Every structure is written in structure tokens, then in C-alpha cells.
Image 1: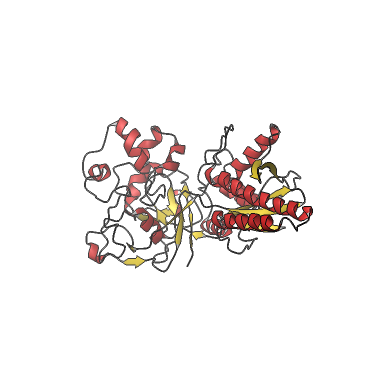
Image 2 (image 1 turned 45 degrees about the vertical axis):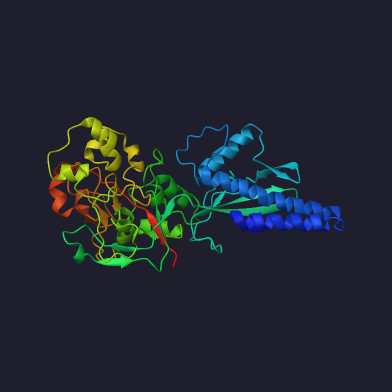
Length: 416
């Protein structure tokens, strides 16, 4: 077996060297060795093509119901099963002017399942697998040509974003920038998840775990697998992130990924000037500032069109489907759901009680809760009103006391 991490440039170098070596020595090599070299080169070129499908989700003549195609093992599985149903080959590559066909091997079972059904991939749970140089969530697939098999590791490079190295400020925007607590990540490489963890993510985690937790499986909303997972305990969230080789989102990192720096060009500012709204460097010229400090907006067209795309607040529930929230409130680095949408749990090392992003669709658009850094408290266990401390914003939730609150979460990793 050959273990390969997909890396485009090194593989091209390997291909060039191997083809050059074969051509240089083909007069003295037995035909068997030449064929073996062609088989290996075929697998390497096929792995590059497979990585393109994995990272882009771009294929032809296949309509998928998967909303997220990039770095999605379920989309890959559906695509190759479609090719099987049409009796089409999985991959075609040209080696020495000859077209060669390569198919993935359907040999993997879901760990912890009693089913004999096989699939084309295996999820590499970081609690079970330790593959050198693979630090992120990844899957393994197997390619085969003649007598050669190669196991390919496809790493998820699609669903996280790099946090630029610079000086950041902690917590909500204050009245005096000079009093802000600053921190920096100059000696760190921080990657944050762009999206909230979904029900599908939790289902994959448990179905591929050797020690399935029935209580966690019971919390998966199988009718809404693409929606965020909102009912795991704090400890269960940390376990999931650990299975991905990550940790639960840190509150300071969340703010850094959300606040749009005013002086972006200077990574070492003496003071950090910032707006409480993720889509703007300025404060007073935004619609949300005007709503929070003036009359409420009654224009439904503006709410449905522009405003709900930036802050999916309470008014938006009656205007746009809840699934719409997944792609709202994008930040300066490309992280989604910075304001509005679902409440979100974070880890706060400075004050562990302030572990909850409050801005959500439980609050009206004009509420001051819709500012970066505004947090409340969650006990990490329950989801009724008594399990939360909404601080000064509790009075805005008097009609929500019987609600079973939805709390999302996301992960991050720090490669020092």
C-alpha cells in the first residue's frame, strides 16, 4: 500500500522524474518494469484529477442535491455511484498518449455499524487516526490499476479560513480605543471554520466512531442534515472539534475574524480602530447603527433584500427561510454568521462565563445586541430560558421564555 497526501506541485515533480527515468532507461528495462512504472504514474496523475473533484466539486453531466460540493465526501459518493449506475469509468487519464481508466475501490465500512454496505471513502477521525503531516479533517480513498493500489488522503482545505497575522483588540467595541486589550497572532497560524458545524458533520462523526454515543446520535436532526447542529452540550462540542484535530472556537479569535480592521494595511497599529459591524470599517454610516439609534426600519423590501443578508434578525424569520441564515453576515476574512442567525457557543479563557454570542434571530433588528463582541452566558447543558443569562438583553426575550433555544458552534485550529 502507498500512502499519499495530495500535493499538486510535488506530485508533478514525481511524475516528471519518473517519466524521465523510464524514458532514459527504457532500452534496458524489462517490459514488466516499464508497465509497473506506467501503473504508478497512472495512479499519481489520477490522484491529481481526484483532488480537483474533491476541492472544486466541479463535474459534468451530474445534477446533485448536495448544496455544498467542495470537500464533501457525500457529494463524491453520490457522483461515483451515479457513474456506476451509468457504467461510466470514474477517472480517465492520459499516460504516454494512451487513455487509461481508473476506478475507486468501494471497500470501506462505516466503523461502529453492523451493516455490510460499503462506501468509497473512510473519514479519518483524529481521535483514531494519526497520519503524519495531516492535521485537518480528511478522508481516505483507494485507487487501483492492475496490481497496484494506492490509498489517497484528501484533506479538507475548503471549509476553513486563515486569520491574518496582526494585532487585534479583545471584546466589544468600547468608547475609548486606548483602553482596549490587545493581542496578536504573529507567532501562530490560526485557521477558523467558515461555517457552523452541521447535523451531517455530527452524524458522520458518530457513524465513523468506534465508540458511538447513542445520546449524541439521538440529537442529530436527520430531516435537516445541512442545518447547524444546535443541541449538543459544551463538552460534546469540544469532543467533536477534537475529532477533527481542532478546538472549539475561541472568543478572541471569533472577534478577530469578525471585526473589520480600519487600518488593514498596517498589521501592527498602536491602537485598533474598529466598527461593531463586520461588513464595514465605519460605524455611523451603516443601516444597523441608524436602526439602533433611530427609528425602526419598516421597509420590508430592504429587510428582505439587503438587511437580512447582513443580520438575520427576528424580522427575517417571516421573510426568508431559516436555511437562508447559513450564508449571511460574512466577515472580512470570509467567516459566516458573525451577527444574527443562531446563537453561538465559544470558549472564553478570560471569562469562561461569557461563552455565548447573543446576536441571533431571537432579537429584533434594532436591538443593540447585534454588535460584535456582545456576549451572554450558557451553562453548557440545557437549552431552556433558565439555562442562559442574557444580561441586559433579557427584557427583549420576554415572549421567548418557552422557547427551546438553538445554539450553534464552530471549530478552529492553531498551528504554531
